[in-house]
Image (cartoon, rainbow, N blue to C red; front, side, top):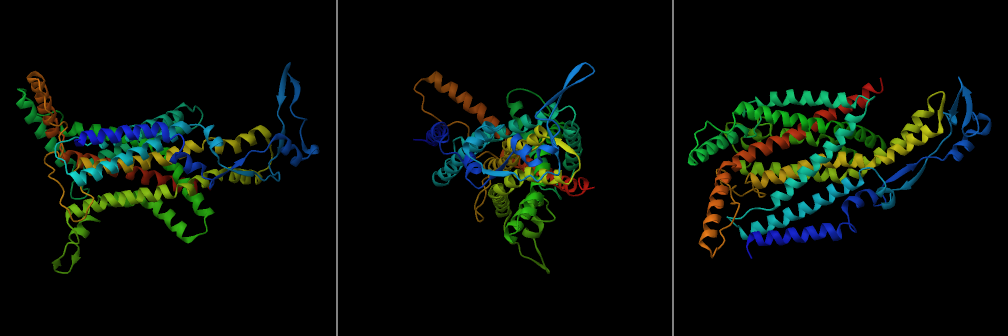
Length: 483
């Protein structure tokens, strides 16, 4: 059985697991419903009536009165400084199934797990068999994960655009334009400072494309100019930044709340590392700060490199994966910090004067738990994108996982898209040969040099967007709201 056959078997087995096993054993459900998270139940109207006391109630239930010939329904109100203590309950699967966006959350997390398992199995098989002329099907799984994550973020962003009275739409548009300008500024920085290899990869892509078109009898200067390429990339970056706006702002608020609610020093230290993780990822591609000091450290007159360039590229991949694993491990602390907003809102209400309707109070408490899966998606989607962009960068960029291995030749792809299969029919063999040559030409156009530059930049850009928005969210929640 060839490599394609093994990969197809792994794909079919994983598809069966997604269909048969995941509905019963789901990591997505376990992350929310493992008994460690608890949510606050909203009080009933009878409980609020008892707490407030009958003499403080304005009306019994709903009181109807005529106003200018119309019947006005006056809701039941209670004092805001009422002595209210919310009851807690562990998050169960029955509770989670009724939440908004729960199917999308479960599908994204479980499909990501399946895609990661397929990737690990494929990587193990490739390291043992070392095939040279087969397509790596795990690339398709990783790209599907990225597509699902972007689709989810797009769906969540469209909901903010539908809000008429709030400023969510303006905030998304503002951050979108901000990140467009930022991307244009970043793309003109030379490779001496930000080491993506984007210009080298694009030059290789243009040369290969021109050569391919000339072989087909077409005269051209190239498929697209470098300015157009960078402009389109900046537009893509602006959309990514707009999609990550509210996930970044929400993470900043959860980070502050989790720090305030945690007393263990180790947990607080890990929370700080998790918050600074995007900054650490950003610095990995800043050449004067990281690569120059590691490859050529200033040790007097002699220069003793600590590792090779290939080893540094492998180290960069491992650091990103470890930081993603840390963020996943701290998910429970952030989700509980979000759920505690219900009690935090009630405590804040008690400090205010006046009255509040029972319905409004119940909505204020219930709304927090109702949007738990939305917050979980905003937490998981950027993590998933960073993880699988890193996996694609390793595979398509021909990097290695080891620190003492030489990476494969990046001038040409390591795997062709189709294998040479025996064809008994001469006509069929000729057709297969033509398809093989065409796909081989595409393989020579989309080289690992291009993928290294493009995927490195996108990975760096997502981390840069997250850190920028996290900083703004930290300033907003800690200073502007207090002021």
